[in-house]
Image 1 (cartoon, rainbow, N blue to C red):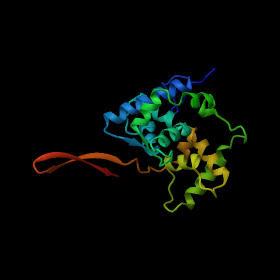
Image 2 (cartoon, rainbow, N blue to C red; image 1 turned 60 degrees about the horizontal axis):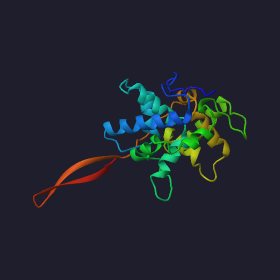
Image 3 (cartoon, helix red, strand yellow; image 1 turned 180 degrees about the vertical axis):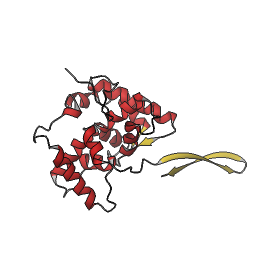
Image 4 (cartoon, one colour; image 1 turned 90 degrees about the vertical axis):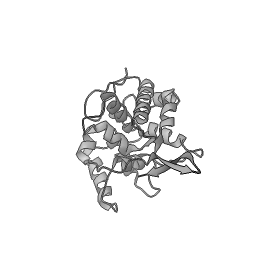
Length: 216
C-alpha cells in the first residue's frame, strides 16, 4: 500500500499516493505555475520557497507540488539533466522538462524508488540519526566560504558531491531533503533562485524586435 506524500509544512499532501501519478501531477502543476508567473526555469531554492509558502500566497496545490519535487531529488536531477544535450547538470530545470515529466517520462524511475521518500531508508546503510544529519550539515555550512546552507546546496550534495566529499555528507543531504522536520531545524538560508528571462524591446530601422536578457 502506497502512502500519500507529506508536504514540507508537515501536512498531508493533496497529491495521489501513487508515486508516478504524483510525479506527473506535481510536474504539470509546477509547469502551469511557472508559465503563469513568467518563470522559465527553477532551482531547488525556488522550489523550497514555494513549498514553504511563507508569504501565504502560494496555492496549496503548487506548494504540495514543490514539496514533492524537493523531497525527490532524483526526479529533479532527471529533469535538469534533460535540459542539456550532453545530460550534464547545472541545478536548473526548465518548464519544458516539467512538461516532459507531466507526460509520464519518468514513471518507471518513480515506481522503482521507495514507496515514500519521507520514510525511506537506504538499503546499504542504516538511517542516519537526526543529530548526525544536523551535525554533518552544520559542519559543512561552517566550512563554506559564505557560511550558508541552502536547498540548492543540499540538492547538489545529495546528487553530485565533490569527489573528495565524505559519503556521510551526501547521505545527510538526502535525509534532510526528505524530512520536513530536519529542514526546519537546519534553518536553511534563502539562496538565489534560477536566472529569469525578461523581455526587453529594442528597435532596429523602424522594425520592433525582442531581445531576451538573462537576469539574476
